[in-house]
Image (tube, rainbow, N blue to C red; front, side, top):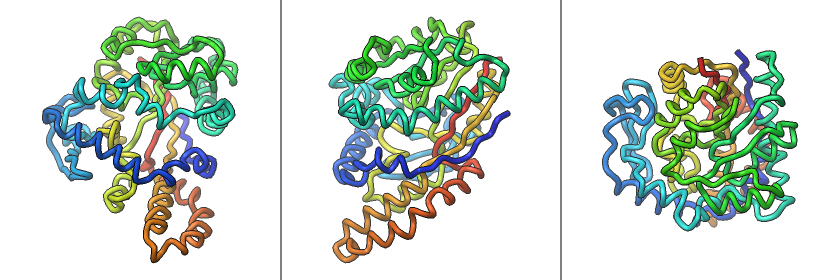
Length: 346
């Protein structure tokens, strides 16, 4: 099995600059989504293992979270109902959610593909090649393709047999415009399982998608029963130090455990998922942005306080040279805010 650790964070600062510049607006938006979430019915079963939900708990931004005593998964204590999911991903054509991930012009779009998504495809290529298979000869479906960043990276790296599916019309339209062709197909959120059952692909990729699905267990079962699908690439958010940083900095935009991220994986809950759905781990790439979040939280706090805003430049000079090495130590301990996995259905 391949294990990779770390990735330089500095290119991400360019793409996440609006987190710094629009903190108050983004914080308000996430609080509004949380206010909808806490109105939903109480969650009775773990979103990962389906056992009765019980275990240690805490409250953040008015939302209670429970660590499942059966599989270790971190669950929000309310259901991801139809109403909640539609309000986050689909209403107004998905424009509100798309605004967090869409670049407004082709130059910025291409830079995002190069900085963020090409490394993901290189990881996928290396992982499949380790199985003595030709990765370019396989068929790929990017499920939850968004505006097509990952699809664009696949095409640039020679993965020509690749298409995407997405529920947000605004993201489908923008993605196809940026790529210059109809490579992303719109589907209804209600058809999520049916589409998964009918995919004609050797490899299904879900980059930052599984955690947003209303019923991830149904999706995994549908893919398991689809005899065409051999491999599954997942990028998943993890229960990491970032969660604790968000609790300590409540007035800074909550990126990781808030809004559409109502639950987070742990290494224990990943093992449970792989065992239940007959998935073999081929490779793992552990890297997170916990230290970039810490840098952002301190910087934004310093700027917001008239007594400390003049010192922020010294904070930047002090912390930026340390950021990658500090994050790497977090990644090596499998405590990063994100993990990429190539899994094989057995």
